[in-house]
Image 1 (cartoon, helix red, strand yellow):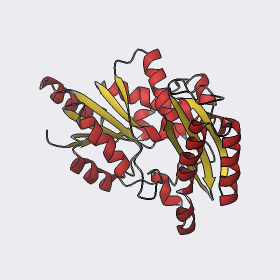
Image 2 (spheres, rainbow, N blue to C red; image 1 turned 135 degrees about the vertical axis):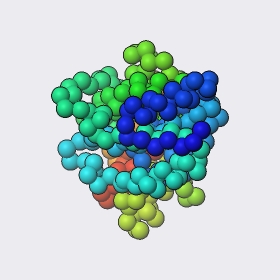
Image 3 (cartoon, one colour; image 1 turned 45 degrees about the horizontal axis):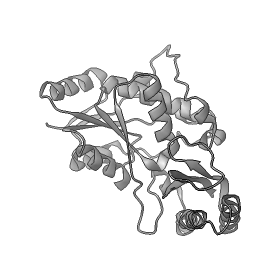
Image 4 (tube, rainbow, N blue to C red; image 1 turned 60 degrees about the horizontal axis):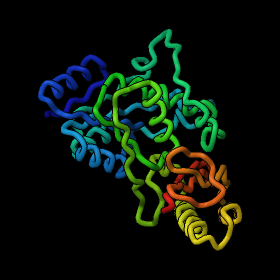
Length: 281
């Protein structure tokens, strides 16, 4: 298929219909743009699961709090289009906010109890905004499969719950975190880091790996290992929102290691909030 780029829903549907008429399996990669290698890895994974890959590019105002970075969130649509096309995306839907939330729009999707934990505890309403926009995008595209990155692991779990609860006929697939050479998880927000902060930022991943190793080996209790990790991160200049061990499937808190498990963290480094997680196996 020739690349289609549109912000118009009807044009988006026409492109999707062309793909469907050809009997092509459709994968959707929802993004907020400012693409990097992590996003492109989602496209690469999607191409193994479907014949046509569509991408949405939309900075969703409903998932940003009143004092968060919606206004300054990086936007680079022209470059995003070039990167997406080179990666094999065939349909790009980049709507305006007025198209997603027209005048009089008043409905939202509650992300449920999980939305008030971990990141949700520090970003009230964030996951309801995510659940709302993802539901709308999935219903507009009706893909066979949608691919999300595991870096936003809580988001991935919530989207799986929403899709199951609302009977949206799509398979939700998680793709592994893509990291810089020094271990820092790739994120559009990494551009906020100063040169000095960028040098410190990889220590978050190092700390997760070392803490995970301690928990698996059982040399200390999970509580003690996490307390030591928080103390270390604080000494390095991070402000820790949370560092917790959770069940990988349910995100229920865990007092001790029992697979499948995830070690998840959210920290501040200067004015930049970083999130990361690792599986413990």
